[in-house]
Length: 154
Image 1 (cartoon, rainbow, N blue to C red):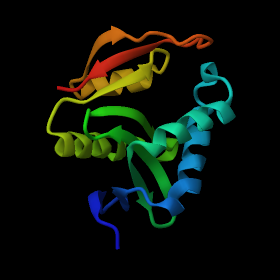
Image 2 (image 1 turned 90 degrees about the vertical axis):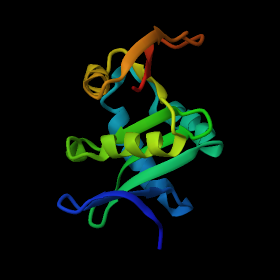
Image 3 (image 1 turned 60 degrees about the vertical axis):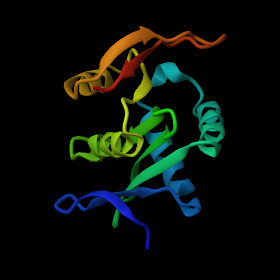
Image 4 (image 1 turned 60 degrees about the horizontal axis):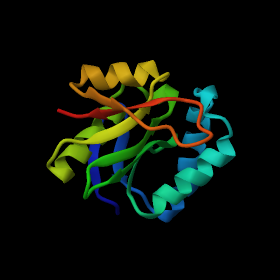
């Protein structure tokens, strides 16, 4: 039985480490969430990029027994860099995102960093409400049309 790092008994979700059988659920969450970011372009290309990232990172998933995987976080625990945090729209505002960030902070013991799309104002506002702050814009790789900003946790 997997170790649950955080849970919400009333909402029914728990956060645990990723296992290989979670790939389909992570892909489903990723595809649904990415539709909210039309500036990102091809979901297929974004999925290829995510799969490369998954190989060298620590992955946590949030699961609810009836709904399955409802969110995930990809982090490098040695550096504290979070490359991906996605939570299904119907499961937002019930503590999953904050649960991911709390786990990351507890496990790294240091401030966390992440890059967020500048146009994703809901995410930027949520991070700022938790005390995160913008430290710099990121450098856009060739062919990338959207801008990201680097944020750091308290």
